Length: 408
Image 1 (cartoon, rainbow, N blue to C red):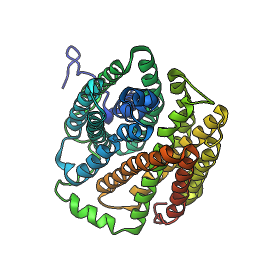
Image 2 (spheres, helix red, strand yellow):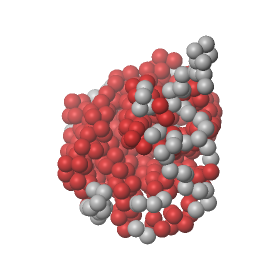
Image 3 (spheres, helix red, strand yellow):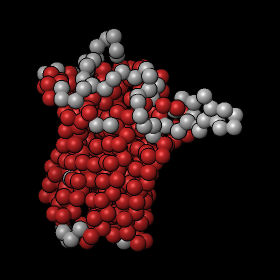
């Protein structure tokens, strides 16, 4: 027992103590989330600059930039199948440290093929860090604090969509592309150091159930795929990121061309349209409680569809309003469907979440390729129509996601 002369050191501001030091704990969680996914969409703000640097068409550059979603999808699925025996804190630290390597190498990528491979590698490590952090939140928070910790993590992810794009645009405008990627590599290393300093190590919190043993993942995954409601949820997740990346990848090329003609720094500031998404994501749970999953999802997708009508108008104001609605609607829809996945499955939830993330990120890659081909061949309005079809499809399929009455 510590004496007055030798007091015990203060507890690490890790997740187990988040209830006692909630502001600091939640702030650290949000910052780690930000530093985990900041590389994912930040480069979309500099897509036109990258396309000029590599001398390629928009669809080719958009596909290369969003190739990270392939790595994220594969990694999410592999961790769901085989990652149950890895210590979560060590997994986060290793993933963020390794993420800095392909990020730094992007500064000297000599051609588009190398750039694409490095983006896939980034996706693998981002997905691993994301998944291990979510596991750590569940294992090292008291049950009463887990939901709040996860909310802080999701909010940090949403913030990374906004701030990451602004940082990328500003850095590329002032110092060029190589320095931009080195800055982001430094952010990845900072995330690993924060986890080492603030995340709890050692045993799980006392009221947390033991982790599902490694090695049973494949059987659980096959069982999940037999559930019609879960298959519907996976399809909707696929279509949500298909729509999101289909819009936010190729709208950059529209905004820098006449009649709008934004410069790189102004293009980065466009992503202030993500601010309403911080609110819509947090309010998604309230909407579900008031209206149920099906109606809440329809409201979110209706907002996204209204936004698509606005982004088809070649006016900066109309496009900004439309982008804000698309972002708010798709982020809220993603939160609603991700929450439904956990309620549909009473057992093997880590595997179900891994399946959902895999479907979600495969949808992003598909949106990059398919919408990009439409944009190159037929123009922006054709691309918007294709995205609108995906949103309508998500709304129709979403009606099949039935939540058990006891957990609705």
